[in-house]
Image (tube, rainbow, N blue to C red; front, side, top):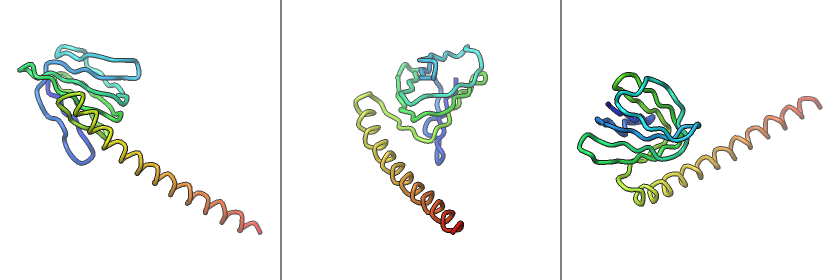
Length: 127
């Protein structure tokens, strides 16, 4: 199978694999080369994949969509981090995703401020 993991700005993974482990809303799944074609949502978690030489790699995903058609498996996600071991991946995820959580918190605060300003202006229109 050919696995490709797409981020908005780059292709994180593009490699041949013999096995993929994913986390879906229905639980953990294993994909093998002769698995039926399908589409599924991915929940935040770790995707594992095994290359033909037996090496196993890991990608932490912050949710996404997986599409399998024949030998092609494509994953689209907004945030993902590649790692070679769980300990390294954990450190990278904590650092990267905490930064994203802070950015999201600031963006939500700014949006809330804009919403409150719109409400204030509607109130003053009625006076």
